[in-house]
Amino acid sequence: MAEEVPATNEDLPCPDSSTKAVVSRGYSISQSATSADALNTLEGGTFRDKVSSTWKAASMGGSVFDGFLLAASQEVGQSILTLANVFSQTGFIGGILLELIFATLALYTNYLLVSMHAQHRHNLKETGDTKHHDPYHIVSYHEIMESLVGKWLKNFSVTVVFFALIGLSTVQIIATASNCYILNDSVSKRTWSLIWGGLFSLIAFVPTFRHYRILSMIGILTTTYTAWFMTITSAIEGPKEDVIYDAPVSVEGFFNGFVQLLFVYGGHTSNIEVADVMNNPATYDKSYFWSYIYVFTLTMPNAVAVYHTYGQEARYNANAFALFPRSTARDIGIIMMSFHQAVAFGLFAGPLFHMFEKLVHIHDKPFWFRAIARLPLCGFMLFLAVAFPFFGAVNSILGAFTTSFGTYIIPCVGYNLAFKSSEGMVKKPFMNLTWMKYFNWAVALFVIAGGVGFGGYTSIKNFIRQLDQFDYFAECYQCS
Image (cartoon, rainbow, N blue to C red):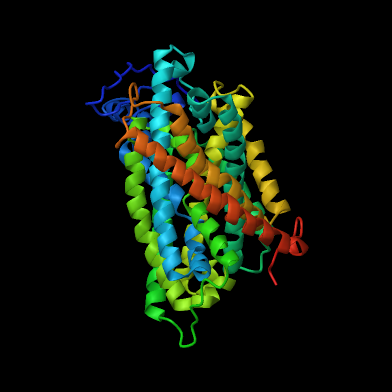
C-alpha cells in the first residue's frame, strides 16, 4: 500500500481569550489526502485516479461531524445489550439517575481532556518540539499527562490505558461470539471467537481514526437499529402479568450495576487519538456533546422499556438478546451488532496500535509495514478471548480500576495539576478555574469512593464467587 507524506500545514496562531481555540498540529499519515485534494483530482486524471479520489473524499474526514460519528460509535455498542440487566440491579430510579450522572460526568471529563490536548499541542509548537511537525506522530493519552503534569502520572496513565484498551478490545470478540451463539448454537463460542477475531484483525489495515468515516457510520446505523428494535418490541409486548420489579435487592447488586453504568461511558482512553486527527482537535468536545445527546436517545428508552417488560428476568440474562424470542428482526440485530463490534474493536485497539508502534520505533515506517506489525497485537487479543472466555468477570474489575481512573479520575486530577491559572491556556475554562478545580476534586473523590471502592469490592467479590466456574480455553463457556 503506497503512502504519501503529507504536506506541512502553516501553523495557526494561538488564540487569545476572545477567540475560538484553534490548535495547530501535524496530521500524521491521516492527511495524506484531504477531501478537497480528492475533489480537485476529479477534474482530471485517469479513471483509476478518479475512483481513488472519490473514495478518499467519501471515507476520510476530520470535521466536527466526523468526530460525532466516532464518539457515538465508541460510546454505545455492546453496552445496550446489558442496560436492562443493569436496571434490574439498580432499579428504575437508580438506573436513570446513575446513567444521567455518569454520562454527564463523562461529557465533562472529555472536555477536560480536549483542553489538555489543545495545550499540549500548543506547547509542542511553542517549544519547537520535532513531534509537532512530525507527520507520523499521533498524540497519546499518557504523553499529555507527562507533558503537563509529570512522568509519574504518565507512568500511571500508560498502565491504566493499556489494561483498559486491552480489556475493551478483547471483550468485543467475546461478546460477538456470545451474540452469534444465540443466533446459531450449532457452532461453539470458541469457534465463533476464532472466526470473528480473525475478521476483526483486518481493522489493522485502517491507518488512523481519520479514515473511519464509513466505518463509524456503520457503527451508528447498526446500534441504532438494535436499540430501537429492543425498545419497540418491548413496548409492543408489554410487561407480563407476573413481572417483578424488585431492584435493588442488595447493596452489592446496586454497586455492581453502578460499575457497569460507569463502564458504559468509559471510552476516554482512546479519545485523545481521535481528537488528534480532527481538523481542529480543540472542537472535539463539541462532537462529544452531540454524541452524548444522540446516545441518550438510544440507551435511556432501551433500558427503561426492556426492564419494564421483563423486570427481574433481565437480572439472569446479561445479554438482552436472550430475552427476545427468535425472529428475523432479532437475528438482523445480532448480525448488525457483530458489525458494530468490529468497528468498536478498531476504536479501542487503534490507540494500542499507535502506542506499540512508538514503543518499537516503527511509527515513521511505511504503512504497509506498520499494518503487518499490528497483526501480532490482534493475535494476542484473540488469544486472550479464547483462553479466558470468562473475561466478563475480569472486565468488571478492569472497569472498576481502569475506567474509573482513565475516564473520570485522571482527567480531573490532571487538569487541576496542569493549570495553575487560566493565563496562557489555549482553551479557556468555561467557568471560574478555581470553582472548576473544586468540582474536579469532588468528582475524583466520588468516583474513587463509588467506582474504585465499593465498585471494586463488589467486582472482586463477584470474580471470586465465579472462580470455580472458570474454564480456560473452554470450547463453549456457560453454554449449558
